[in-house]
Image 1: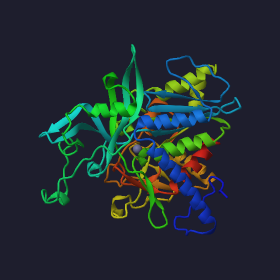
Image 2: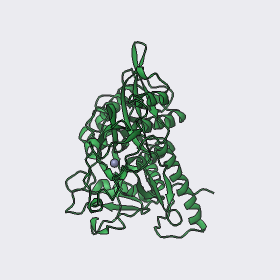
Image 3: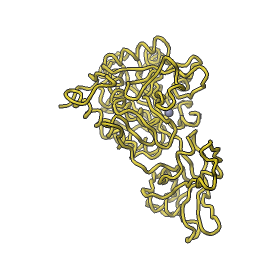
Image 4: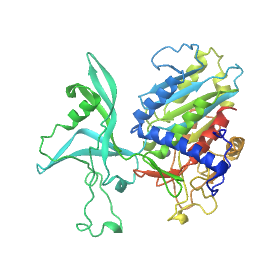
Length: 450
Ligand code: ZN
């Protein structure tokens, strides 16, 4: 027996057994599905590939930005940009649309990016790779773990160039720590220099340098000399897992923001729109400020929604009416109260793992939530019987930012910022709650079904 989506009791401390046992199976199933998605998605390019496969399977039609858009039989379609951002749209059967219902999240996570000419020989005994930081990660967490390389290649194809995704599916690299005997101060706080301390070890120097790209070419099934460009990132090889007494937590790389990406696409695909045009948008480059062609600070969302209106033959002004009548949920993970540092959270807004969806507030408007948009989000949670929590930064801590307020500067639509509670954000592996992914799916289904 499987419980109906969204009738969760939301009881943080309830015990296993009875109905709760059935609920736990459901939470576990959704969490394992989410972890499978994360494992298959070592980079934002893979996130978008996996999302588009889900959309294709559900019968969505692909539109390309450089082509004419002719609406076919399908009521759903999607567009990608740069292979790393995607916007999927599903139309309700009735024609008197009330507005756009959008959930926005991000495909990228902090990582190290491989530079051009990356191989560096060390005294003829080691080959290491030259990398740079992508986003603001906790550097030390990348040390002493099996790592590999994945991303996108630009490959010569006759007279043209095509792109190819690649994942070198083996334990290929490690960034070794310095032994405590050689740095007795290491546990007093260490400043890591990304050009010195964070370069991954690739080989033992027995082979000449020049083997890295050959390795990548082999994994991609292309000739090394045909690789004309690459966007390659290090990724953590460890698989996500459930842990804790009776398995209440998930530990996995890239939960920020793939947990929200997964939950929003799952809700989008499970929901038949009634009065609103449903939109699931996943943007790249949030971790570096969203300012790229495919980021939230681009015209991607606005252009896509305008072209939809055009392709539907809607009169001028309809775009503005649908924006004014619409709503955007910006979904990006939130900081839960830390078990070892409960004092760094706000004194009265204290989200916990497994406590439900987090509504995020910021007086300086880094989060878009206001009284009205919070109330609407709470009503969708109530409808789905999903618990929700609130997040503010402590007033003396600056906190982070996300893509909601950047998106709404382009498409000025009512908006709320939400996230799922997690610990160790931007660590190589992050910790979240087993129930919260399912809670998010439930609440977002209520939104998409309105
Ligand atoms: Zn994020």
